[in-house]
Length: 138
Image 1 (cartoon, rainbow, N blue to C red):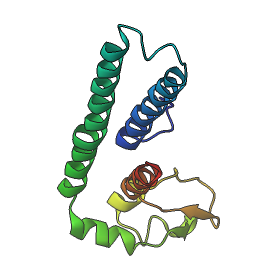
Image 2: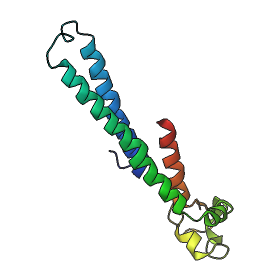
Image 3: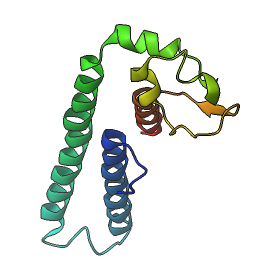
């Protein structure tokens, strides 16, 4: 899994790609006329169904529930406060107007140059938005 993928959504996309791979292989094998009469065809189909069900349950129960529990554990009042903080700030004002907890948890590090615009977007909010984007792909 690439480093840029989020923790839960990335694993879910990976598991979903495995499902697509085994579905494609199954469809190709079903297209072969001589496979239906093979003695091990029934056994292979049962193993396919078992693997697909396990991957589906891994996505739906394990990954999604873990992510949902992590979201529920977040303080909603704190999220509302984070959404009210300006997204861009001038570098000369970052020490005066913002509390230290907010300026330390920003998405990009602060530069020493004054007068430039800097990102003040919260890392926790960014992680949640990236996870949601990946879950929407599934």
